Image 1 (cartoon, rainbow, N blue to C red):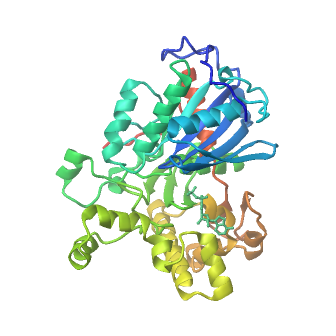
Image 2: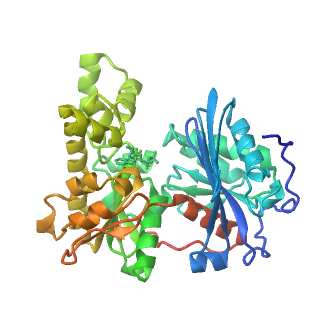
Length: 448
Ligand code: ADP
């Protein structure tokens, strides 16, 4: 790939934070960035008001740079074109983003209508923690960056990486291209006190904001949106339980279109058993372990975040597909145990949220595991018939990778659907609305 240095974006060079009113009817190309601890995932999404209304937004390209800081793995693909794969030493986020942008605007990528930096109109960032400060997506300015920095103590593993992505984008694009922050926590801002307060002294909440925040909010919000468009429902008619089951896993109880409870808490560690995270654990284990193993607090948090869950239980891997293979081909007992504990923990949340919602119309499966594994969906739903949820085995196993569909029996009172998530789409739409001065969808915030 032979590419010159990125050029400044002249089209937006006068942008200083006031809404550019000329945009609403011109499609915008939004670069959506998800900056992780050593990776940047991206999509280029074309959207505007008309496309949003028709649900016709277009993903022009997507990709990932992994292992930033050493020999990085690059995998980019424009829609309908062959993939571009390469290894290259990319020392930091700035270098990784440079690499992404150079490819996006290059003739090699072949992305229609994107030939220079001026064709990237907005950068939208996934930001994991917005604390109580951010209950909607916002255009990034110095105060917003300060706010995200203040939330670092709440999300020390995630927000610093998100900030690196923001700073890299500011360096690459300059002041001319607006940037938007879309928070994983903001969809859950509607949770009532009864859901977000822990049973600890209230002054600890008042003093330090120790409470449940919830994460994967953009994914749960997307699933609720897609469910309502499929059923042609208004938002207020959506009463469902959404399950995002990937490497990280969370459930969300959605009532009248709003999040009223979710399984992740103060950090993403709480809730269901995950790839490497323990999920719900009695915190007394920490003191016990510190005596028995001589582990420091940070070491124990590492054990709970990185060495637990499917990995810790099986002693093999955090990857669900590999565990199912081990079980199938070698009859590995610990693999079966890990999968069973995982499924039981998801089932427990379905039960809890059916109680919380007073019954739900549907349970939605999503995320790498929820979208792709009929075996796991079946194991999770086993025994839920008395609660009105009956899976249709043939519909469930017939659903192919990436497909959306209903997999419950026609008689099932609680329907079961599989909906592939698409957080990037909502990040792009929020970004478009934020810079166009169009109000974001309103989720009424409960008084605390
Ligand atoms: P992330 O949370 O990092 O975005 P994903 O949503 O991609 O992760 O989910 C990754 C998980 O999905 C892994 O445990 C992987 O094994 C699992 N997965 C993907 N495809 C399948 C499949 N066909 N069967 C079972 N598990 C699968």
